[in-house]
Image (cartoon, rainbow, N blue to C red):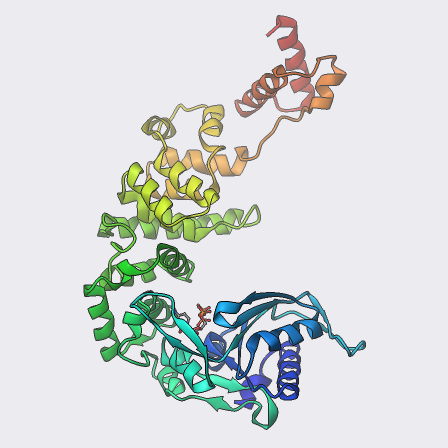
Length: 441
Ligand code: CTP
């Protein structure tokens, strides 16, 4: 495996050597584990360094944190810690050594552990263990490999469950028959890895997964864990493909009893995918679209407003997300009808669309295929979005207009005039203000 490690970026290799050196000094063997090892073998970039320590992971993380001057977050219940690294890593005790970090920002460090699930779908009870115990608690063979990074075994692969062979044969395989019972979120994880890498869930694992789906195992998982897994599904490279596979294997009633995904709904998601590509080609520079949220808005389209409210409450989505989901559901038919009309004025387009977030606008554009609505949304993005009058408060004061609530009225009138093509330049705006104030409006 040494040859794999040698292919890593230089900064990362230096970090691994430093971690290994400290582990040897503290007599606590250290291993790279999880998705990092899987992706290293696959040749896929992965910037989440996941380390397991045979010994006291938190004590090790604290020492490493001091060395790297890193911010440390501890999770004592699980014996884990996360180090957040700065751009330039100054290594404590070696004043000459700084590493420019290109390829890594965060290191997860865990004590090698044994896990017991007291009930299906509960959080596990954790006790310290050896590397083998730690591998056995994992989801799939391809995620259960480790590479030693300390002592003379530097670079040695520990592959107890033949994960490397499963990677080569493109197979997702659980380590034991109770895997989905212990942790039903693995149903979604299996689908996610299968679709991401274009692998196959091998037949026995598929049987176990289908059994857990029939027994509605996902319904007993804590809602916030389900939410996080669903978001991960929607953040994958091809969410439509992912969602389609979830629909076939488990369906989405674990999120809401009425959340079904018909072929029509799937078409909407495909439309969303096209509209996201359109946005990214044209407007990615304005702000990053939270594309997973547009897909979620599309999926929730089958639910009624009250059901969407319940959904947001149950899964405790942050208020910004909730607001965007509900604002799509809450769009009045009158606004949609106006946007579908030919004779809508630019100021009316602005008034209807400016309060909506980009995620809602993209969902809107995907759902309503009316040509006028399409054109109106396009022109909004191209010309109106973010438009403000040239005139500022300072200009109004210079014109002798006392500050007060009427400033807003003046700015609204100016913007309306500008959108509707009545004024273009600042001079024309000032002329309009003079006319308006003369009239006493
Ligand atoms: N893991 C597990 N069961 C889970 C979640 C995680 O066994 N329900 C283990 C797997 O070994 C996994 C590792 O913890 O590889 C890290 O989890 P995570 O960061 O969620 O997954 P990655 O495999 O790194 O996947 P991704 O590429 O999506 O980040």
